[in-house]
Each structure stands twice: as C-alpha cells, then as structure tokens.
Image 1 (cartoon, rainbow, N blue to C red):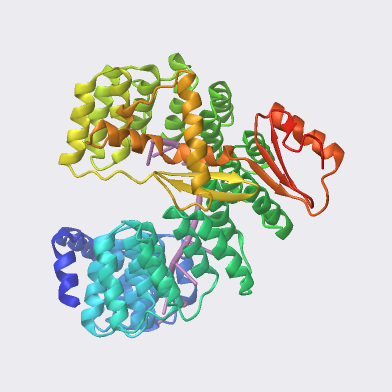
Image 2 (cartoon, rainbow, N blue to C red; image 1 turned 60 degrees about the horizontal axis):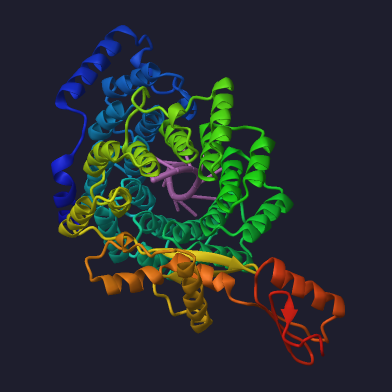
Length: 572
DNA sequence: ATAGGGTTAG
C-alpha cells in the first residue's frame, strides 16, 4: 500500500521550495532578534496558548513560532500543535509545513492538522504526500485523517487514488467507521460509480444522517432520483430526523425526476418541518419547480426569498430560458445587475441559451463578453447555432468545444444534428466516424412520464413495461395516423452506422415515443358501484373534447368511451 | 484538540 501511494503521488508533488523555506527561516531569525523583548526565562508562561487559534495575524503566530525555535522548545508538542493549527486556519501552509517538518516526534493530532490544512487549501498532492508519510511513520492509529484524504479524491474526481484508499481502509479495518464509509460513498458517487457507492453504504453497520444524505445524493448524481426518494423514506422510517442539507438533496432528486406532484409534496414537507429557507435550499426549490414544469411556482419561490445570490438569480434566468421566455430572462438579468449582483459564466451561458431559444439573437452577445470562454459557453453557442442553422459558426465553436471536451458524446450528437438539418450528409458521416474512432460512448437515453402521480420510465426499444403490448400497438396506430398527416421519419438522427431498416426500428421506438404512446393509451378507471348518469355524460364529453379513449369498469359492465359516445349505447 | 453531507448551464 505504501509503495503504491509513493508511486502514485511521487511525480507531481507540490511542496514549499527550499528557497521559500530559507526565506521563511531568515524572516524568523530577524524577528527573533528584533521583536522579542520577553526574557527567555519567562517563556512559555507569558503566552496565552488557549487563545491561539483566534490569533489575529500571521506575524503574531510567526513570532510565537520563532520563540519556540529560539528556546529550543520546538518539540514541545502541545504548543507546536496549537501553532500548527493556527497556521492552517490562517491558510499559511508554507509556515505550517516548515513547523511540521521541524517537529521530529509527531502525534496523530499533529499529522491530522497538517493533512487537513493541505486539504482545506485544496493542495491535493501535498495532502497525499503527507498522508503517505503518515502511513509510513507507523503513527497512524486513529481514522481522523481518512475522511479528509478520501474527500480530496472526491473533489479532484480521482477514482484511482480513491480506490487505493478504500483498499487501505479495508485492510486496516477502518471501513466500519461511519465517517470513513460516508466519505467513501460520496467519493464513489461523485466519480459516478454508483455500484460501489451502494455496496459501501449497504455494508455500513450504522448509518447516521450524513451517510443517508450522501447516498440520496449519490442516487440523484448517478441518474436514479426515484431511488433517492425511496431512501429518504427509509431513512425517516428508521427514525433519523432530516435537516435542511438532506432536504436540498431530496429537492434535487425531485428536480431531476421532474415530478410536479412529488415537488409539491416535498415543498410542503419543508414548510411543515419549519426548515429555515436559506439561499441554498431556496435556490434548490426554485430549480425544482422550474424543472418540474412550473415557472410560476419557481418565480413564487424566487420572490419569497429573503436572501438571493448569483446562483439564485442564474437559476431563475436559466429557468425562463429553457421555458422559452427569453424576454423575461433578459429582464431578470437587468434586475440582477440593478441589484448589484455580479453575473458569472453560468449566468451568461443561461442567458445566451435564453436568447437563442426565443429568437433574441441580437441581444445575445459573445465576443464582447469579458469572461472566460469555457466549454459551457461554447456548447451554448453551438446550441444557438443549431436553432438558427448557422453551420459556419457552429463549425468554429465545435472546434473549440471538442478540443476542451473530446469525450462528451452530447457535443458530437449536437454537431451532427446541425449538419443533418443543413443537409450536409458528408459532415454527418464525418462526425459519426470521429465518434467511432475515438470510442465515444453515447449516454443511454431515458424518458419519464408521470401519470396519476406515478412515474413510468422508458428506454429505447423498451419492453419492460407491464402494458408494453398495448403501448406498441398504440404507437403503431399513432404513427400510421401521423404518416397520413405528412410525418416522415428522419433516420439521420440515428447515429449508429447500420442499415436503414434497422435505423427505422430504432427511431420508431425511441424512449420519447414510447412514453407518449403510453400516455395516450386509454384511461382506465374502475368504479365499485354503477357509474352515475352525470358522470357517464361527463366522460362522453371528455372523450370528445380531449380526443381520448376511456375505459370504465363499473359494478355491472365495461364502458368504452370514444368520440363522445359510449359502447353501452347508454344502456346499463 | 483533529473527521464525512447542500444551490445554477452544458
């Protein structure tokens, strides 16, 4: 294990340079000569060590540090511990590390503080290196540092290092600790390895609020928000009381799921439980309502928020954008600037999207924008090009985008769609070739439909639904009608390199079409008594106005409603 | 004394 860590972390270490260390020591020395007036004999009683972490400035700390050195007390651990901790809290890692190196006999707290300091500063490699030294030193007896190092693997999405740590943790028997296991679950989830996240979670001997929270987040993160919501119910059944952080995760699950019914339930729950609606929870709720299709409720939440930040504004602007309300998005953007809130990259991407989705191209903006042109921005621009059929600009933007993110299948699909729309079949073929050559995997497509508060999920060519036969029959009839009305299937949207017959098969059973066919299958209800005369009339009108088939089973018989008439011919 | 979970786009 130690050797593996060395191999892994060795080439990329970042640590205070020798030069920096020298400079640091000379600063200390000059401080020692000029600033310390206290007689040596009075040291260390004069220092109020307990107040050290609140030390206002670094120079004060350095002075203390210096006195330790001058008085030969650097190995006095309880003092060194406190100074080290203060250094890390003040984000002075260079001084911290210099002190750390000077202390030859370290205890586990000392190691933890140093590792935690590098972690908080986001210095992945230094953190790993010190951890490696910790493992080698044989001082590692408790598990306090493990969640920290696992967490930085999560933050840098370093699955390889994460697995290595999991292996280490497993061998040392630290897996059963809630803190360690929760960090592992979260790491696997952020790296999109839901199987392993679930495995670690299932094997936990005890689960607290945080473990549940990360697992719920993991489900959403990995595309299974429904399971996340089920976990939330299980958590409460187990007597764990939710807090607002777990609620943010639940709200996110609803947003991903797109179920307005579930959205309302969760919103009510948040109200009933009296959770304080802070910026993050409030913003999550805006996002949830917008993604569940209700701009009105999203705006209501937005208006009701006590405090808003860039993210809240961007969320609402984006919502207007993807609901096609470009004008509203622009107005809100103006209001945001008026409120003195500075936009970020994401705000601009959302705004660009909003404009391109509502034909407000003149107002959307890119060369003049004084912001970093990242992948999100290029992707938004290409999206705009698709809508306006600007192949030349799309070409240019695609070059930049594919350079930044060559593995993102969505970009290729988008580009191919633009070429297809412009009738440039050669370019379509080229994109397809590029995808094959670079082994780009398309993300599997799914469509969800909510009927009577229940969510049904479809994949391409899906036969798993209980009403599958009926759905395919419905789809066939529907297609026939559409083709009579002028619909012509366009196989250019199938990017697989296969013959046209197969392309048609795939195209015809895309998950969107299956979900819609399911949504159009007859409405079936069952009544325990005879259907009432007024309801009978009511349903006849529904079948006429809504052009739907309705099947009613009452105590006596079946009624099939179609085009305003019932199969019972009003005899029942 | 030191440890794990939260918001926006693509």
